[in-house]
Length: 392
Ligand SMILES: Cc1ncc(COP(=O)(O)O)c(C=O)c1O
Image (cartoon, rainbow, N blue to C red; front, side, top):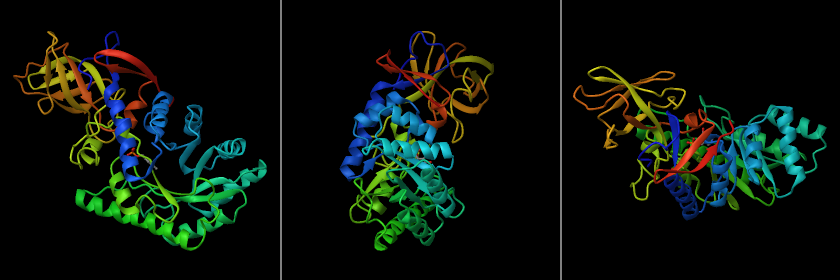
């Protein structure tokens, strides 16, 4: 972890730790190999082509994106397989996906369908542009009260039939996302996640049993699920081959940098695992302590402009004082509020935290921290070895 802010960079600054990044890319790739599953890391986490290239070089099967605009960045970074984990309804976007597939038989751009309307819209645009090769489509399975996706297996089969019957489309598999399932009790959450993943598996089996996968093509059938919290359960429930000839594709994005909050607690390669060879926190923000206006209070020079707060507040971890001495402050200094440009910290009145000290915080949720930065220094042993640019 970065033990000091990068020399010469104005504060606050978000910093990537070179060793932790390398470790996480390799660790996730190894986990997937060991479990026989493919990885298409979600690119929306970083939107950083330099990091996309590292993930692909480490053996990622492809990249996931949330939109066609992001898919363009993924393609430009060299991804030959892009899983657009979303419905695509904009005519220009559909036409772009179709053109990618037509231009190169090796290129795979997958999109979702969860309704007759979505399928018809894809067909309309592809027909109008004179699509030559069928566009691969994953039928999305969702759950009541959730986001997009067919609400039951019967509707997934109905949508899959429409896709299979279309000369402009290719039924490539099934997809679902368990990462938004939340319950106050962690055990109940795990049960709900398992149940939903069971529905994804049932849908894949129903499509297989109905013979709908028979023309799936060179990439075979894909069954995709898995953010960065529950990928172990995905493998547990779906296995490496959910139906004969199919491959499981994980889409974990946040595992690249890991974090100091949600994923630290929920990752099977950290909080829910043994901690053995755990993922490492690779993303931190450094800022100055600006003020100690009351004995038990301090204010630091970073805020919502610099870290995500959608999942939880940043975690104060390390302080460097005026002499350069480092002190672990986790638990002793707590971020209690974050404004646009300021963070309010609670400290013991006798704590030596002083104006001008340097504070390192860990973030809770990397996705909403990356998008606040256009350039992030990558630091190894106190030196900036690379500057990563984002394209949000
Ligand atoms: C559809 C979908 N798949 C995969 C992911 C990646 O999950 P995570 O951010 O936990 O890595 C997300 C994240 O929001 C998502 O929405």
